[in-house]
Image (cartoon, rainbow, N blue to C red; front, side, top):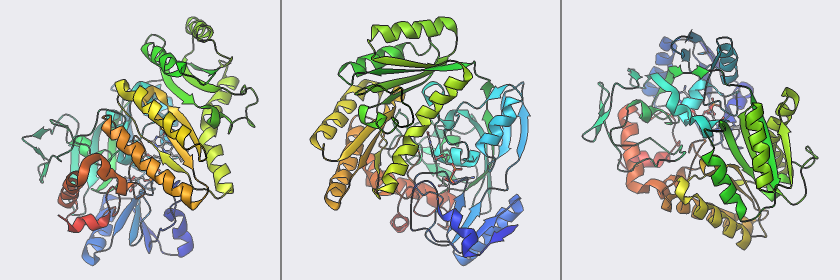
Length: 477
Ligand SMILES: Cc1cc2nc3c(=O)[nH]c(=O)nc-3n(C[C@H](O)[C@H](O)[C@H](O)COP(=O)(O)OP(=O)(O)OC[C@H]3O[C@@H](n4cnc5c(N)ncnc54)[C@H](O)[C@@H]3O)c2cc1C
């Protein structure tokens, strides 16, 4: 097994895409076999050394970055073990890079529906954060496609669990090696990546999905796949940013299946300003609705009719491969441009990432608008996955006073989403950056129930410390 001990070699493991600065580790272990994982767990258990699991390092909440101890990287657990074209099922190790996997299954005419936006992530990282992706409006998050997980625990046990075999009953999930109590909170029925999953009658595999490296190391997974997607096209409709947006989006959502829509996104007027230099077709003073759908003449004609009906200012269509690619870039460029601009002016982004049930979205959208109006001195933008009732609300405070207010707005937004039956954390997970806010969603008792679960899986309390809840909570149970 490769072990890295030089500071220079370790440095890159102390980063992800969160800009978290407090990473520290003494060693990085890179196992290739289960025996080597046991070896690392033995050392850490014996010497009581915290251990953090590292995947592709694309996470946004510092989940893979420890503040001390050792790191175990899954980068050499990277074999695609089997692809069964007939059953549309793949078995792979957790360190497989998403992009490599997508390319491999393409040869079999298959597709991985979670289709994560950042394809340098590892499959294990996707499972550990319940990642969503480009087409989660149509297909949902990673959770839906996980059929089996093999996980090694710090106790030395191997937990192998197939979907459909173990369910919560009478308040417990019985994994054979131990029984786990169902937490007192329930995971809301919205896009959500917030702590351990909890539902009456839930499948035991769902507790592992989204557990952010706190319960054990996922070594292998079975994923269900679908046939390759039909050719797609993109239409971006630019229109005046007014009251009609919500009705228009509602109408488009109703046509989801009829028009085979894969993604439905929104960009407000201020977010489009960050794209103007790259895409000169953006008309002044407009917001945009971005749709990716099946590329056939009849459906495209239908979209042109819709655009006329809603009196767009302008429309751009990516139908042929070159223009399609350009508009894919349009979607991806926004977070990139925002991050580099504010990094340049040394301004920290505060990003609300909440989702709410369909019927409460209008209220939540109006809440954001009101906050934006009342705090117009702070630079804010609103964009993202409107099809899933999940927008990114980014705030860019420029001084200490604005920062204080921006954090208060962050907290109020999470509270509002929770009051509306939603999640304060729709994607990316909690990691270390958001753990102090998770209590808003589940209450202190909910967090303590998570701690109890963690201590059953990892009684030595060495794994993924500070992810999901602060490590001090481990002493409270
Ligand atoms: C440009 C960009 C766009 C993104 N878009 C999205 C998006 O649309 N939706 C979304 O959900 N996320 C998105 N992300 C975030 C990120 O890609 C996902 O969270 C991804 O799933 C992280 O995978 P990773 O392999 O990089 O994990 P890492 O960052 O290495 O780790 C993430 C967490 O998973 C744990 N972990 C990793 N591997 C294992 C394992 N084998 N066993 C147990 N625990 C493990 C780690 O301990 C850590 O807590 C985006 C990131 C970027 C940079």
